[in-house]
Image 1 (spheres, protein in one colour):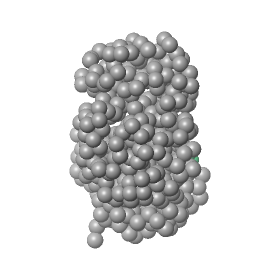
Image 2 (image 1 turned 120 degrees about the horizontal axis):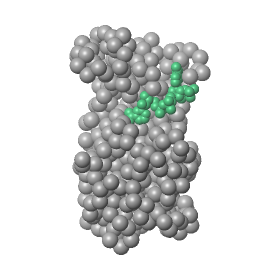
Image 3 (image 1 turned 90 degrees about the vertical axis):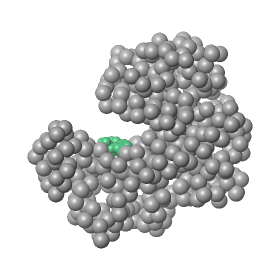
Length: 398
Ligand code: NAP
């Protein structure tokens, strides 16, 4: 019997349907969660990524603000933009698209984002909260992988999970999420010895390496679940031929376009695995879905008890958390809690609570910095726009 394909597009659509209900319930009390995307310069890949994030906001009815400073922007100028967004009441989530131009200190920028608005989950406060098993904004790609596993009924508790890759944005948070869900986790990296041997002990393999088709069938115990995070554009004809020898449609696509997308997992792994995520159409769609989910979650968390409970629209499997009426002790150990909006009767402790924003360094000049850098002004719809800030470009259109 062939391996089960874990369809990321279908899972993304489920999550969007749930989020739409959540967003309508917030709209009923006058709240429209808003995501600000900052893209520095004109890198085509960054443009594509940010545009698809903004398109997702528009599809779901979230407010979106697109800030596009030039490639020559300095660290101080970008800090000023971030500070501006930190202080805006209509912005619930901030993402700064990576990579940034060389002259910008990326760590400084990521650390300057208010943890309560850090929808990418990269801020050390959110990382620390994840380590401690406390509610946090969690990095989108690993949170998306948890959704795939849970919604596909792949058993996690007690499973041997091998995560290949230890980056801050995928491998490490992935390992923590699996650990919190009671898997026995092994983390591998470029210095690990006998990788295939370690991987073959796994019930679940998560490959986040960035090396096309590195995980071959010899890494996989028959019946194991294989999650492929990798997204590599293969441009070399010989490499494409090696990877996709048994996949004529892919080779045809390579010949037509001069490139083909591959994952970290060799496609022939499908002959051995019990279940696997395809590339494309596996993990990729979940990353943006979780960004949307984090934006809605951030909107609720920031407002604390001033918004009604999300129980009415929370997915059925999270009902237990809602019944308890308080934050689950260990939210990641519950089914589908990567998307769960924690009950809002419990405000987030400092520094997640944005009432602490006054203590953030303020830069008066930043009120208009975003507008200064935007290439086109459109009216925006969020409540406080007229009050304090100039309009910003808020759409991916064009
Ligand atoms: P990264 O920062 O480059 O990290 C790669 C990790 O893989 C490192 O920990 C590295 O080990 C390890 N590694 C490299 N070569 C290895 C080898 N031969 N054997 C074992 N481990 C090896 O990459 P990343 O940001 O985590 O991304 C990984 C992949 O996921 C990339 O293809 C990226 O495009 C993709 N990605 C996809 C999404 C999505 O939405 N689907 C999101 C993010 C990333 P060391 O630490 O020892 O160097």
